[in-house]
Amino acid sequence: MTHHPLTCDCCGMNRRQFLQFGGLLAASAGLSLLGGQSPLQAASLAKGQDQPVKIGYLPILDASPLLIAHARGAFKNEGLTAPDPTRFRSWAQLSEAFLSRQVNVVHMLFPTTIWMRYGKSVPAKVVAWNHTNGSALTVLPSIDKPRDLGGQVVAIPFWYSIHNIVLQQLLQKNGLKVVRRPIEAKLAADEVNLVVLPPAEMVPALASKKIAGYIVAEPFNAAAETRKIGKVLRFTGDIWNDHACCVVLVHEDDVKNRPEWTQRVVNAIVKSQRWMQGNRPEVADILSQEGGRDYTPHSRAVLNRALSFYGGAEYRQDGAIQHPEWRNQRIDFQPYPFASYTRELVRLLKVTQVEGDNAFLRNLDPNRVARDLVTDRFVRRAIEANGGARAFNLPASFSRREQIAFA
Image 1 (cartoon, rainbow, N blue to C red):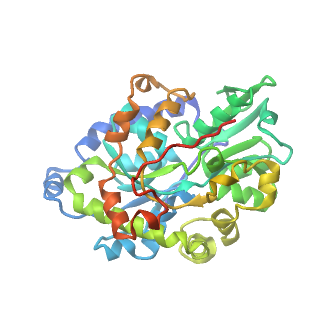
Image 2: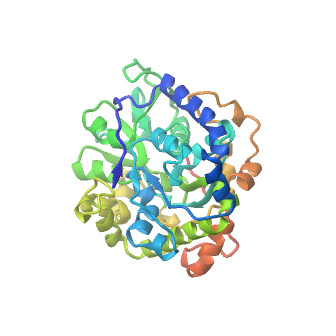
């Protein structure tokens, strides 16, 4: 397994670093349009010849469909070559690697794909969802309700993330003001300071009480529970029912010029998602540090908790689950990218505080994004080949109405 080095302080990506990263995306977009390739390679691309499936990922459960597809030979069964995935520890690093084509199939924060395509003109396409739900707001044991986060620092994984969107809505509905200041800044009693941390930095930051909480993908919430340094205040899937966090992102020229390759990639991922639904202990074993494959640094126990432990009465008693009638999973695996979700995501992103220039959002049409950023033709075929909509608990119409309860 290839691991990407990381140097990062506990404050995450500051404003200057974020702006530098945004500039890098903009500068790299032109190269990506050309594929970042030689004329000979470009000619090969035009002929639709195959290429290896080079997976890039962060060690979170959002990436598990890609990793399970690799581990169980699903790409090989589709006639594809798939070298060992490359593991990163920050979204900035993963995005840079995608732009430079070190990797060509990644799981990416859905709002980040919007920023990349429309804010930085990066030619990329969402071809499927990786999962639904799978994130939570985890806090110090002394925090009992969202209002208790007043005057505190809370970490998010990236500005353009469902975590940032959901958290800001939740805080505002509880009478709190969101601010973006240095981690050591003094705060008023009704202010909550948001800082960016890579997921791997969040648990130690909470343990040392440098932050009062974080909102992030599993298994970092389960890790805090297992270590007894924090508790889940709210599951994001209990706020936005069956939401997507990460999506499968590929280069747009691969969608256009390698449609058979793209279809086979999606086939492998969708087949793996169906297998994962009924084999959660096996998923935990494969991805765990005890599994011997070095996919993640997480223990089997932590992964098992994140994959399976959700319906406990204590979560309902403490308020982490307020909508048991939704009957969802802590994390689930279905690939279809609902247009209604994309549209609502864009609407909420427009009213969410982020770093950098977000002027591109002002005139961004949610309907256009749903049509332009996302393509569902590959995933529809893959779903049909793997039991159809019913096998993934999807409506036959492939449409739904979003259920959101921020209060």
